[in-house]
Image (cartoon, rainbow, N blue to C red; front, side, top):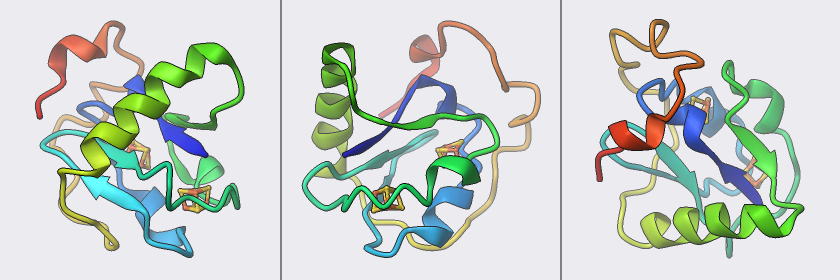
Length: 104
Ligand code: SF4
Ligand code: F3S
């Protein structure tokens, strides 16, 4: 599966949702996640993200992010079209320790 990771938090550009052939993105307050059981590993979303928040889950370290994506994909609503990008998305690019800013 592909995973959305920390850098998405508070940026939430949503370019990723427009290209997913199986519509497996789910939307939280300030981040999106990918449903690990629905993603078909096509990889087209990865280069769409301006902050490189998306990557394939390859290492054991990524397991945490797979779990995180799965947990929220099961409770958040599906998203298939770009909505309103957060006003300060640009300022939030590359900011460290974004998990502190995560809101469910
Ligand atoms: Fe969707 Fe493909 Fe990205 Fe998986 S890898 S989330 S199927 S666009
Ligand atoms: Fe997040 Fe990048 Fe998509 S910032 S919403 S993963 S385009």
